[in-house]
Picture (tube, rainbow, N blue to C red):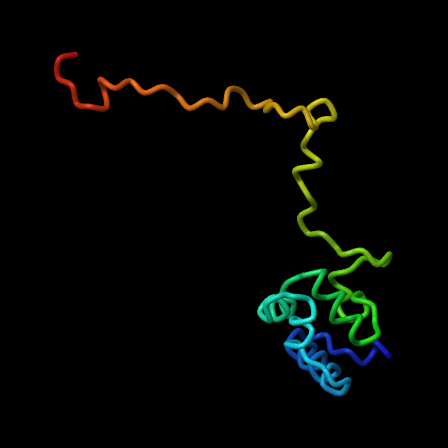
Length: 122
């Protein structure tokens, strides 16, 4: 399929996607059912990056996701991450998988019941 004919405008592109699915005898609802996802998850891909859904749509059209959403995919076929997994990048190698927090004691603070009961004898 010629990706040069895919509209750049998000609304027009979404209508193009739905039309392409229809002429192939399927729909967004069918793809959602097959993927065991809610149809709204597929509709979210209209405006927001959702790599799993984009792959499913592209596969149904016999295309690569980057051909339909070039602004969301890298040239190597991986999704463009606007917020990479920060949890992995902020952990030092010595902190990984120790089961202990490096942020200090996780025990809840003990209460000073005199101050919480409104005790005037203090």
